[in-house]
Each structure stands twice: as structure tokens, then as C-alpha cells.
Image 1: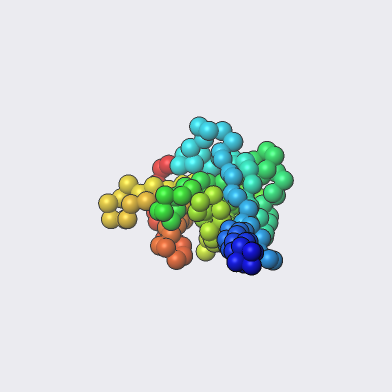
Image 2: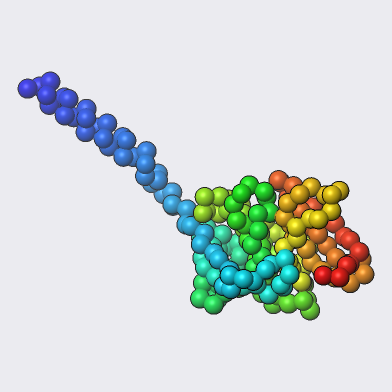
Length: 177
């Protein structure tokens, strides 16, 4: 009988221990999911400055609020954004310009990197941007992949490429786009 009782107690302790490994530790919050999609499925962020994304940004919310993204507007009607795989990891990432975004004035831009539907990182581009689009290199001298472009006049077009750690910003002569 005593051995049966000890076996039962041992099995109960083991069951509790296994259950604890699956749950977050006390005081740890479960990461909130990122669920963002283009409002108009056909909007092409390589040719359109005004694509809107709608949804929730999970744990990235405080970072986006820093640049003036209105989370309620993002959730209900859509906010300007450029989706793309900027870090080349096969996961969708999103560039969100801050409050007042237009091609008439520059605003800060936060890039939300995701992994498995959750925020992996949020980084601010090194310069403020005005006319933001996704950039896919057709230049054989540049590494393949996606980046961001801020179209300007003269020598004022800036291309942003993520190198795995941060953003490389290069100025180029403007071309017809």
C-alpha cells in the first residue's frame, strides 16, 4: 500500500513538472501575435505609396506608437505600410511610417520583423522618409532581395537594405518610377 501511495505521489509530481514546462513562467507574458494584411489585396507596395495595412501588431505596439502610428486606426481602417521580407528569412515584415506620412514631408519609419507570427524585432530606419515603397533590386551589382526606397528628386533617392544587423542607407540618382 505504501509503495502504491509513493508511486501515485511520484506520478503526480511528474505530471505537475511536465505541465509547468509548457506554460509560461510566472510573471512572463505570452507574446501577442502579429496579424497584419493589406486592406486592398491588389495594392502593390513596389509601385504604390499609399498601400494600407489593417490588423494588430502584438508586442510591437509600443514601438509603433513611438512614431505616431494610431493602433486603433490600424486595427479598424488601415494604416500606411509596406510589407516585405526585408531580412530575407522567409517571414513577412512590415515598414510603418509615422504620423503625418505623405510625400510632402518626412516622418520616422519603424520596421517590424516577425517570426512565427510574433514580433522578432523592431528597428527605426536611419533617416526620416516621405515616399516609401518596397524596393526589389534589378541591379546585378547589388545582393538580391527586398529593401525600402524613398523616391526623391536629383540625388535624393535613398535605398535601404537590411544587412542582418541594421539598415544600410545609400543615396542614388533618381530615376523615373
